[in-house]
Length: 591
Ligand code: M6R
Image (cartoon, rainbow, N blue to C red; front, side):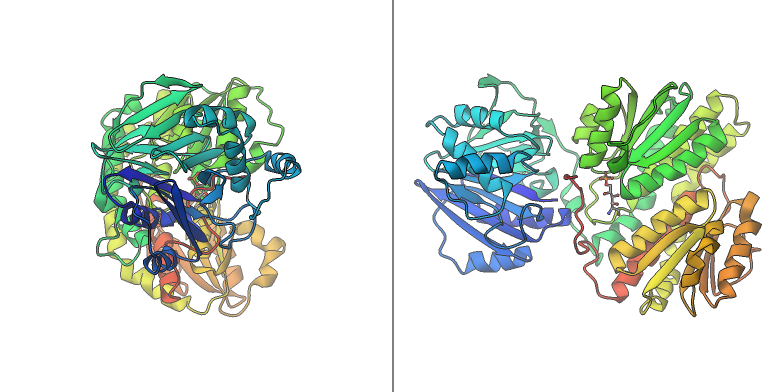
């Protein structure tokens, strides 16, 4: 959601900025812009639409000879997606790009308007630029230090002052890193934007200010210079490229065996690294979207296998609902990006109540990774497609391992060694499923004209259905819903009509007959039933795909990839912008 790139160095920043914006496209955006500075002149170029539209505009403009610039992709929050609202915003001597939300923008704007400032855009960012400009006293560090005291909310700012040849940055509750090389310095929302140029970076903490020049990177907090550690990223250039794949989503699904191997190796060979949840009486799993659905699988495993009471709730509700913490509770926070605003707020709520938190997270530099009391990292590497696939699968794997360890500690698992052996087979088993991709492509073709679809399952299969349904709707725009199989006939079955696709997930042996009878109910109403199961004996409806039957701890890991591929191929048949579905952002950094 919004992306920032900035550059100061020996070269013209244009190419670095455009290249960086392209790498950040996955975050979701609807307009973009750049600002270049030279000899007290700042040139701003903005465009709606794709980065290619901005690039065309830049190529048709005579650019100033610059070595300092900032750039931005905007996902509209305050004001519609148009050129005026696009960043950078220039007020007086200050030019700004911004991620986040200034919560007291209206109040600040009213004061500034009364003082005679005229605003052109509807954005909170222009207000922030005006506040910084008002504080400007010729000393950028002092200016920024004073200005951020007046701002409430979240921000990552890239700032150019007209009469300084340095690049400035500051952040609070919104990600921003500083890239370092000998003769060039960068700022970026994440490392993928600049990994082509450097893998050395500095992580800015809240309200730390970076002052960057070609040769130097200095850091300040509360007006005092501070030392910062230079980190080395393991992200590779290939991670930010599609390679031979048509879309990142497909590439990332196909990477699942590899990332599973990496994650399982890390934990299975050293079960001590797996957090012990057995000492808690209750677990709350809090997350958004797919991360929440991974948590729903976790709930079934914790309750069924480890006998630990567990609730799941989406973070946007949890943060505001009354939560009763009357038992020894662990809050598990799940997030690929580690920057989802509601999830961060839910985690902080638990901290305020003195509750332990465990974060299952992918991005190691993220806010959640840094603030959670305990963390377990999944090793998915950068995930670029907006629709999560490989990270979701690893979140599920992490819940399997947490539940297995807890069940073992509590003496509830008699086949521990067998289950571990099975875990080692998982990457190959997933590879086998992915090798059948043409079978799922066929389903995608059959869904070409579908307007609605349903996913039904019971217990853990229902949790899998939630993710299958989300994958289909978010990339292919087919309306779909997931139901507990037994719940359908309490109303929704009235929507079942001739040829409507219904996906049935049936892996749970205890209740498979029950789901099967729900399948027959929809089939009797002419639904087209696609069954994904681990039981070859189940009736062959319109379509059946059978995965190998493995331990219930890991069964979802084999069932989810077919559903991900069906979502992907359905969207592909429709020629949609799969990696950047409309209206969506990769990490949702606003409420
Ligand atoms: O980065 P997070 O895991 O916190 O993101 C949570 C959701 O926004 C995310 O899973 C979303 O639902 C994806 N679009 C699903 O593909």
